[in-house]
Length: 302
Image (cartoon, rainbow, N blue to C red):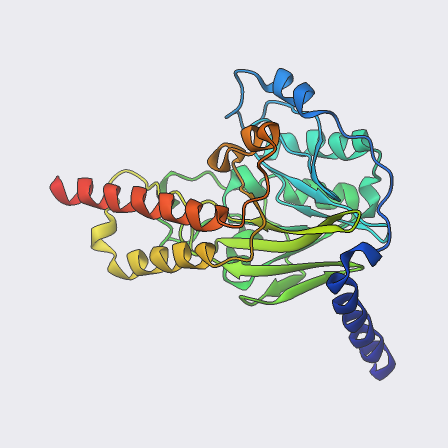
């Protein structure tokens, strides 16, 4: 047992050195993404569809969007294996795997699937993808029970209106601020319990040549609720939501990504060449908190 522990410790130390000089990271496989124009043409009029197929595109460096027109699923690649961040709705597992293949990547090289939050539109395909690829799942510890059972917690404001999904085993349940090491890749999880009690954001480094950026996959910050739910009746949850906004506002954040690409105008920013914006996470959190305050005001006025 002791030699294996030492090897893991040395590997983690080596990764820290590698990410300090990101250009030294082993090269990812040469892949062939579609162009942004091809994706925009295929998704025209379907930008918010959870299931409309979209071709895979490069976001930056070794980070690719392999999701649908309206739901993000990110493949982060390396020569030592890949990591998938979110999977999508139950019906799209085959599309996600096909997009991984279309890139020229091997689905069997997906080592981990990470989760943002415990709703079927973002993790409904995870169990199927795990069976196809052999990948393991990692998630924030606060979401583990929901992900394994396939059901939201009763305190989730949307719980009464949510469809269940196929649960899956979570091999790594991470604490807020903990890092998952996957070969040369390192993903840090950040609890931001606004959209759901188990909401999680993830940050990692991606590089193009010598230029490295911190990718911030900030979880959804919208606050919908099932009919009959009043946030004003749940002050503890309101405080939790505000902690979620604050967590996203302080994320390390060069390039903002979100589970629904439209929430962060991903396609438009890619087309404009304005992906890199160190203030994007703060602005996203501020917009979301303003919308939450307006919703509370409407609720109180009824």
